[in-house]
Amino acid sequence: MQNNQENQKIILSGMQPSGDLHIGNLIGAAKNWVTMQNDYQCFYQVADLHAITDSKEPAVLREKSLDLFSWFIALGIDTQKTVLFIQSQVPAHAELAWVLNCFTQFGEARRMTQFKDKSAKNSENINVGLFSYPVLMAADILLYNADLVPIGKDQQQHLELARTIAERFNNRYSPTFTVPEGYYPKLGAKICSLSSPLKKMSKSDEDPNGIILLKDDPETVKRKFKRAVTDSETEISYNPTKKPGVSNLLTIYATLKNIDIKKAEAHFKGKSYADLKDEVAAATIDALAPVQAKFKEVRQNKQLLATLMAEGAGRAALAARKILSKVYKKVGFVV
Image (cartoon, rainbow, N blue to C red):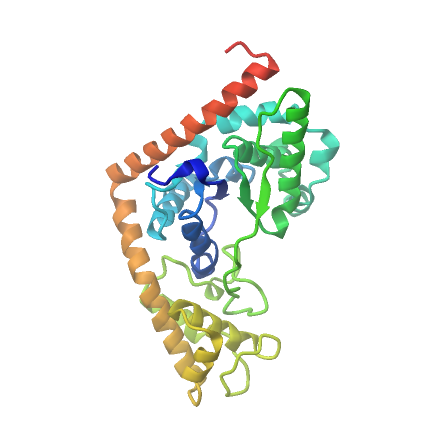
């Protein structure tokens, strides 16, 4: 890496290759990831090991993993600054997860609320992998001695488990793992569904018209914005409580144009909802164009993609092996 890493804290983050990225990802997580790579030593993973707790077609998982890796680059992840890799290509993740399973109490894993929620939603496939998912997440973090882990509220409990495991191991043997802290990046604008503007835009949304995907072509983007829910009034103003649909469109426009909401409101003063939808669509198309072009360039260049994946996995494996070797020696394995 080209950064001066000696004084940089380490960040570990990742995303599962499930569903398709949308403009909420572009405006939120992707911007934070790109910003963080300038100030921290970052390890970003395509978390495909986590993805198989749900049944997936092998060919689909492979394609989604390659897509996500390519989108990260298209969105601005610099593979010279950042270690970008596919999780399953670094065996140390699975190896450390087994060791950490032996340092995790059954009751601790059973209390994880995400396990309870996912089990309730998928009662026919309550597998052991789903149960030990947080331990694999702990391995992801501890493998790289991550100082900071970007998390939302739904992941706080998992981070606490990782901290508990790290402290337990350190106390039993000697200091081995960095005990990670949560990192709460500056929140990007909350982008809501176009069809249900009271709900956050999500790649798992059942209504495809509510989501603007990064891969959507201009005509699809225009069509979806034309169908966006607004209200029965005519004034274009920002009021998330009384005018959630219009406010959501203003948020998208302001964010993509890099202006504040007040300027966006002033821009649309006296204009119609049709004007608002047309201009938001145009701003979205303009923002997506370079990202889509970069994605296509990377995704279709199999040699480039293979090279970048191998380089990322190699750099991740080198860092991970240092920690795993220490762990193996301390637990008594012959190494």
